[in-house]
Length: 339
Image 1: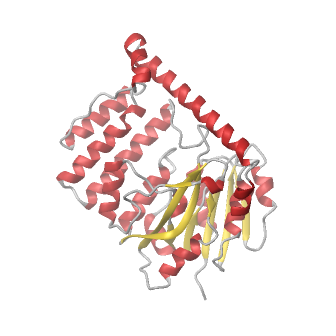
Image 2 (image 1 turned 90 degrees about the vertical axis):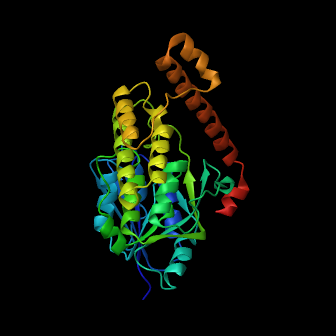
Image 3 (image 1 turned 90 degrees about the horizontal axis):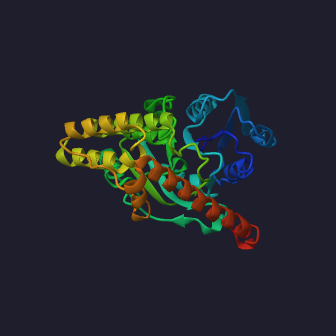
């Protein structure tokens, strides 16, 4: 009998997308699968829409709002699968994504090996998804994977992974302290418990760029900044537990420098902690800079105002691009056919 794959979908206020996401899961060509949707106290119609799909293969439950990590942990506790496929409520799996990865498993792959896949970004038009390979799109050891992630500020989208039950249990639950970067921290722990990553080129995931209302958007939220820095510290600890060399410490300093603008100047206490951590790694952080479009504002009115303007302008630009893509999607018959 083929292994059972559990497709786990945490959902919060996802009424616009949840039906499409569940559909992409039900259309998986892998024959043995179960779907578990956990509605995390949505205030819209997410639960009622998802419940329409309930069947012997699809379970839909709801809970009081506790955050995405708690919803994921609940879904995992309810699952029975030999392998786990995570899927956010607005993303999409190619119909053969799981089957492509399970083909590799069938060749005698270790249950301690993480399987990853290609992923492309899209807004509304699935057929326009852009797949841009990075240095993580290959087979890697845990050390090399984490090193490249931190040094080059890379990531793999949550749904790209397929994880055995054995490796999932060795990883432990999602960390409910983390409001952002919780999936990155979780899979960093999975890497520590693994014997490496196998990248399956033909398996594909579609990652919806949902805009500034997404959970991972930090903006000027103090709680999210604290969560981000905690996740960063954990990442650094995990990598150094595998290898504490000069190249690793240099990559960790670069990682801190890359994300420093997210804390500056709103949370100078976190900036100071980052500087202290960099010093213990043998490095030194530089004061963040703004692009030329906003640097004159910084010089004239100070950092807080300049950063606020840059955030508002980025949000406006993004909203215009998404609105236009949404309009075009209504006339894109090729996109509907492509699905």
